[in-house]
Length: 261
Image: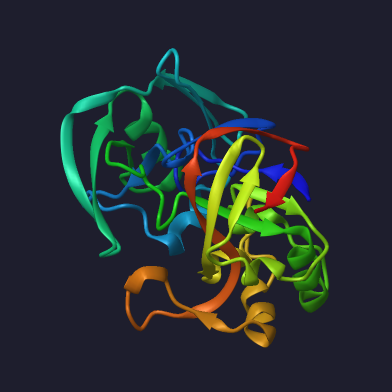
């Protein structure tokens, strides 16, 4: 097995990126979901609204504390990424509270103009940044191939926003790795449970257009799963891809070996 693709997003709900090398720390891929978008009521943009912002591509220069936004009309906006003085806490889907700080600069004006409603940009200050559940999500190419047969067309792994796509032909073998350790490049992970999925998987990860009925395919052949460790009791949807937690930080690059320990 080896790393077939890497995924990362600096600003939650925007275009998923494909770096070739990343550093994995205790909170997952470094700087992954370090920033998030908020509505006028200071709540995170809800998942059913993420499709609006998928055409936006953010790059982050951590050394310079600068963000660079590429808009679909070709414009590029740059500005500070530093947390500002306005700070508050957001209840993230009743899972946990995340402390954030609004990022000053051009972001509120640019994002609000794009969305047609007030949108702000915040830096996530809490442990785990803006990650939903566990630090890492992974999926195997065999599972993507199985889903493609069900859907009737290739399914882009970016729809699942997985940190690591693993080249492995077994269909959903990762379902049976729960509790096992996985060496991915120089990082060591512990595999947890499958990820319950929602309708956002049906939207094109680059344009945000609804173009593929992934959930219908998942419902046909995948069992429903809930969140691990008793989170959100009663919530369950078809599972696809797998959560993992970090046991040992390290660098991961495309083509690195993946070993089930």
